[in-house]
Image (cartoon, rainbow, N blue to C red; front, side, top):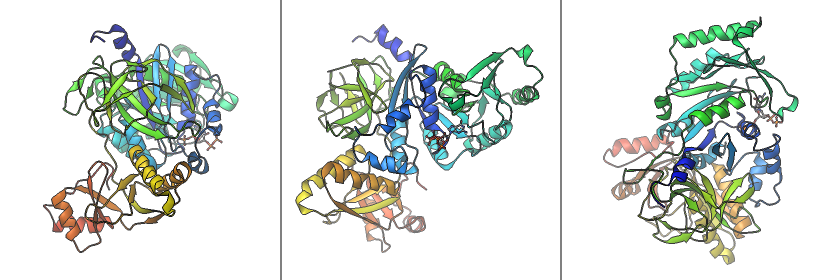
Length: 527
Ligand code: G4P
């Protein structure tokens, strides 16, 4: 492939790869469905949830997901709209699975922050926002549930500006108060969009573009115009560079349930969300999209389909053209592997893909060793920086109850560790054979136990350990921590990271004060 492959450059330019980040219940599932509906990818909203209901083909551990009514696994949705190819990466809503979201954020080019109009910025939204911001991802915000009583528009702008500490630029402005939502003014072309509720919201809302001159006598439109004048006085203008640099957040209003404002969000993503851009490599260079194939594996998942017992790596193409059957090298192992069966994943359904371009996210079935964070490339070696991990806050021991299944137990743990379901820790300074699992929250352990049982036939018992705070340290630090009379310990992750663990933040701080020279680094999300 030559560097001047015009098809590749054109295809990369029409990719929009993004995620929606939100607190549970803000309406992410509903919004996702409505985006698909408006893009014409599904005929009727509800089909994605209907797919969710068709669980027979998914493995048992997803029962955790069903039982809890939460989304544990991320799904990639790919759809075309107006000559743009969208890759929408779903993110789990529950806090205990935040590390999955972190990985997804390593694979996207933009993110939509979804806010409930009544609740504003909630803890999970804020945490994910901080992570996205640290990565410099361009962000836009969608204020949802405007059909219900909530904060008034100016109040929301103030609230978001205060919480997110970034300038917000309303691109649309709601007409009517929350609970009595009539439509939006699109500030970009001064058009008034009047919405009419469609029962059930399964079809696109009746949307009427009203002439400015003919707005009629509805006082709600007059109020909206007055509010907009205040916004104009504030000088909040959209600035593409500031948005692309993650320094300004365009804001839109709507109601996913009633299909209000969805078309505008979709068009905005089409118009301003960035296409695949040059990506920084480990050595600090920026790799242009028209370089030979290179992709980042940001998620690995085994046994998605018990009938196939396969392992799928979700890869984000950063440069070059993907062709089915190509042999690539894994930068970590230096081994080659064939990307034979590439799938685009739509909910639980898979469609085989023959070629894909920068920005695309696809599932490849792999036989060999591919882990989260691996770089797969063609040609000269290249490696993308590791995906950051969250500071673990929960720890358990995990022991095997059936000695005859020891091998399966070990294999299962290794698999879960490679997928990043939990981090499996070992003690470097002790012979204690009982592995320790570390995670952000207890639900991760629940998934691990369930998967060990259903996929590996290993009956395991977990026991909570007393640590709640952890820091990365080095060999010297580890020795100091181990010599400390407090109830501290040191563990090693599979990637070699040494983790010093402490019963609580207070004891950690006290230790740090007494040992100022010891290296104690926060990972992302540390308290
Ligand atoms: P999530 O994926 O972010 O967790 O949220 P989800 O879409 O499941 O939405 C959570 C609840 O909020 C759902 O109600 C959904 O219908 C509702 N919702 C989403 N968008 C809007 C909106 O624009 N306006 C209003 N009024 N409600 C909205 P539920 O009662 O939990 O479920 P359901 O019975 O409606 O499916």
